[in-house]
Amino acid sequence: MNNLSSFTALDSNLLSKPRSLGPHNHGSIHLQRPRNVVVCSVKPSVAPPSSLRVSGSPNQGLSRIESLTQVSGVLGCQWGDEGKGKLVDILAQHFDIVARCQGGANAGHTIYNAEGKKFALHLVPSGILNEETLCVIGNGVVVHLPGLFKEIDGLESNGVSCKGRILVSDRAHLLFDFHQEVDGLREYELAKSFIGTTKRGIGPCYSNKVIRNGIRVSDLRHMDTFPQKLDLLLSDAASRFQGFDYGPHVLKEEVEKYKRFAERLEPFIADTVFVVNEAISEKKKILVEGGQATMLDIDFGTYPFVTSSSPSAGGICTGLGIAPRVLGNLVGVVKAYTTRVGSGPFPTEILGKGGDLLRFAGQEFGTTTGRPRRCGWLDIAALKYCCQINGFSSLNLTKLDVLSDLPEIQLGVAYKQIDGTPIKSFPADLRDLEQLKVEYEVLPGWKSDISSVRNYSDLPKAARQYVERIEELVGTPIHYIGVGPGRDALIYK
Image (cartoon, rainbow, N blue to C red; front, side):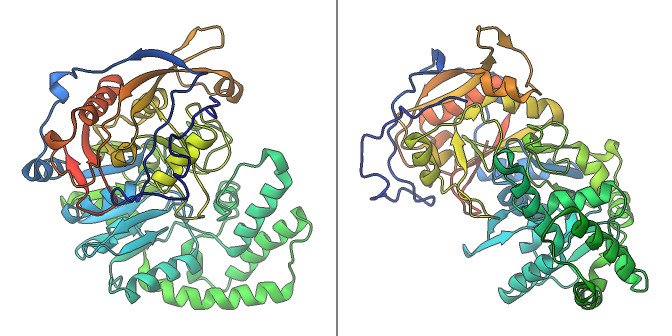
């Protein structure tokens, strides 16, 4: 991690007097170059490979979307919060089904309808704003029913019909309120070594799933055995954590509550493995929406500072019950910089005032928790690692407009050991991640508002150089560029 506290703002009143420069409402940022990082080169001009240079236009956008394969996916490339929901919302207009395959209400996807109204979704797939789209919550998702019903009620109250448009897998596991309580107790026990979870109960619920005493959606159809199964879970939590309040009255109240939930949920329950595979055989188009991101993957992320599921490509097959051979295009979503919520390694993090400025410029506060996100430069080494694992066919670079006021922008292009030895792969060891040095390239900023730009060729030259340098370093084309939160604030390349 680089201590970039030496960053200084030329305008000392920036945070108290922000200027509105587009839809993200970010103020002017002018940061000095950090003094304790390795700058390997300054590239005023970059000529990208000709195969990656594509002009943008509305027709180009439609062509990009229509060329996506029958089963496509949108996955995060960093530590989450990249803006996956917006792309899913846009692409959903051209797909029959949008499906969630893993995670739970720890995912926070913010989308806007045609009128600009904001919706924050946590369990309901982001295709819900498109009236013809069927939304599937797959078997790999953990479902908190009170939260799901709250989302559905909120959508319905804002004119979004959910009736007959949401299916919940009968194999999905139920996440109870006590899972959230246990999540908080567990974090408290860890003290200074806490993971920094959303405290939404995701880890404890997946733990019950893995040790095979979890309760699934299908169990709601058997209220004769449901109380015994719930009693086992609650008794186990009470024996493990001091202060966990559990007694017969708690069990009775929970059972009665879930009897009502079961009745309400019944129209939504389906064998989604059958539904999705039937749709595939009928040549219907399916878009998979990932939650969290690859750097939070239980296997490939910065363990143990990760989520409890597989947000990478492999999680699509296990979380929906579809064969690997039917998977086609996968679009990786990556911010033009990097953010992370919670604890864990962050090699390109900007500490101090510089990080604060970027946070306020991009309004980097969690959709699910409201927590301030840690901010830093785009980490190319981590991005290449994510592309390697997932085999992305293209990338969606989001929030490029947030960087508009910077006089120069840095890219973390490689890792080195303390003695200068290059690190060729993304380290699994946390100690290595904490001690490594990051090599940076410095590119010129464009110092102009790009939030109204809709054609790639209309972007300032420096902005295009930044995009094309990322493509060149990663080896994956960028087909979509976000320049604001709205549906229309997207450039097709």
